[in-house]
Length: 317
Length: 317
Image 1 (cartoon, chains in turn blue, green):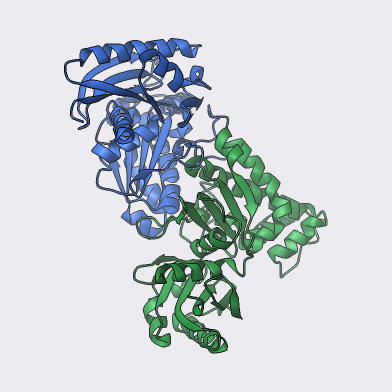
Image 2 (image 1 turned 90 degrees about the vertical axis):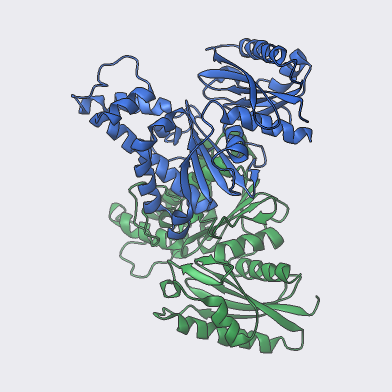
């Protein structure tokens, strides 16, 4: 197995990362591109195959690439390799990913939901490594989730389990890309942080964030660290809703650990106390005191890639 | 195994049922009592041991009682047989159930959460029989839940998993016995139905339920069937919140079936359309269309008893 390699692809709403990974979880070559704002899936497929060829060529002397494993921000049919619904990259809705990419590269292709892949990565190599029952939440462009039960990822009957970002936290809340309203994703994603800044800006005339045309969740975090009241209120709301949804999961799943990762988790210092307060407020005492709430350790750029490669190696054995 | 028997006890907020059950799930003898409004756990323990002795004596010619298995409306520590928190029978908080009952009866004692027991019962003998991934909700004095994943009950790390009744459906909602606010239990239990009638009565001057001092959830159901607008509004709200919480579970667990039982499920005809509407509104399309939502088939009086006995037989084998 030592010279067998996997092409692992993490397709996010913002970036597309392709890597060659060995069985130890070491990344031998990495390509990072912007995810195109494509109308047609062929455009994204072309970018993926080009990046895959580049990664494959680059590692030729280290070993043989045996499969491509892709993590995508979508509900999927894993058995048939089809993307079902991809709220943040809507061009991919209904795309027959595995068969098309497999034809282009003459490789087996494994498809996984990005949050499940990140969960598998954190469980195999990261912050959930020594836990058999874990919830992994990824705060990115959207909010993804993966659930580990007795050491295995929970897939459910259609393979769509783990959609923590679509727990309803406000019955008449903000509309969501999934078609529902009040989803956690509308209060705890990087996108939501920026929207909340715009919604609340009028109430904070002294905020440094007022009137800025380009705001990122990281800029909101920096403003919060510097004491900006608008930014602090946004992270209070984010932590309030994230904590409410996680308290539900503490009551329903009674996990050992909740791992929080993704780009928007950079603001950890500003939202985590509100998350913990909500778990204390809403969860039953014993499971609420038992659960550890920790930051993801692999980083947003590696969890999905390492999880996807782990999945491929497990399927090859 | 054919002449081995289990004493199975279902201790509810309203009734205490004790039965002798054989391995086929047949109830050979049943005792039903009112649950005492006790201040001290010894009073309830005494009632349980007396009922157990009566059931044991009654079946002497059919076989040998090998264990007592009890389903209680509480979070429990199964390994040590301790009741942790029992919101609807608070006298039992912290009670060392198994060691005390075991001493009295000289029998092994198995303790289980009532909703888990009902879930195991429905999975072994009832509406979830042929499904490997199921959610079972019990609408009684409180709202209990049990989750079957890959054919096994989900316990979590402390054994407290499955507390579906304490999913938060209103962030600033009605206070709950568990210490939180806005729990599903406050909108979908028999107790909640009666409270909602009282809260809304002033808006419905023509309702037959106005001014009644003793109202039961079944009387509210009967009024609704007869077209009473207050009763219909109460069940609309109940279905709205129950459906919202179940939609969360559809997104998180992607189960094959959701089984709804318990006394308050008698009003099925009046709330189920609102439940289904909420699942359509909030859940992802594929898992929402896949999941079957069905009534429990064992009946409130048998699910917990048969589940507890199944658990005991499984542990004896």
